[in-house]
Image (cartoon, rainbow, N blue to C red; front, side, top):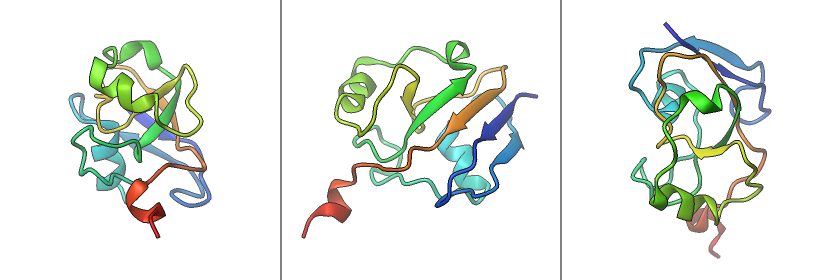
Length: 112
């Protein structure tokens, strides 16, 4: 069974977390089910960038991002080559090390 390892993040999981995962779940689903309240403003429908994460290890085990996810990643804060939307990144059979960015762009919460 693969592990999903979340690196420490002051806001979402200060101590980090290592979670055994059944393949076929999204990173976002796993996080939320384990009290890591990652933002997901579009309710995991690939319509925003709030669940943006970095896959620090195991990136190549994921399916490639589709065109819609790539379009949204182009709008995310702090994108790097290891970026994915956690609602679209489905765990396979390898361990993944995930870093939640310090900042996110949430158009709903940023409107005044």
